Structures are given as C-alpha cells and as structure tokens.
Length: 128
Image (cartoon, rainbow, N blue to C red; front, top):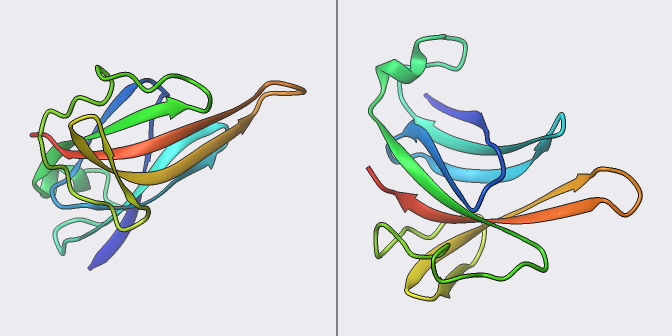
C-alpha cells in the first residue's frame, strides 16, 4: 500500500527527520502555522492510522537544508554528509558548493504586516 505521511519540523539551517527508508518527498508547506514535509512510501506493514506504524518499517534519517529568502547560502550549511544526494521528483536539482541537492519548494508564513517569511527547502538525502 502506498501512503503519504506528514512530518512537522522546526525551521533551522539543517533539518533531519526520521522517516521510512526510500520515502519520496512529495511536498513542503505550512499547515496550522507549522512547517511540514510530506513523504510517500510503500509498505503493507504500516498504515498512518497505526500509532506504532513507524516501528514496523525500516527507517533512516533524511536530511534537508533550509534557507530563508534573502539570507546568505553558506558553504557550511550546504556541506553534504553524503556526496551524491538523490534528486527529488518535485523540483530541479541544484549543485550548491559540492553538494547535489533537490529543491523541494518554499514555505511561506505570514506573521502580520511586514512580517512575512519564506524559507526554501532542499533535499540532501538519506544519511543513515
């Protein structure tokens, strides 16, 4: 069975999320004022309704890079732990410094007049 799961995250330069091995990142956005990633994977062992589902599938740490619009993209932020990260199906790949990343998309948040923020999320691949 193929399912899509949601993963909430806090915005920081490097975001690492434990998810099923081989999960395909299908989107990024804001839900209830919280940044989220959506990932699709196939498994007959787990369903989203099952509270123990994540324990029933092999998981890895998936790494992402996050850059706010207008902020500097530094070499330290985009140093890959794995030199050839996969290209996500969502966006175009980008060679940033020595790291081949997939652009997933942008998260737009409106915190009031003049307080809008946009973060750009890049897929740096599975690291564990």
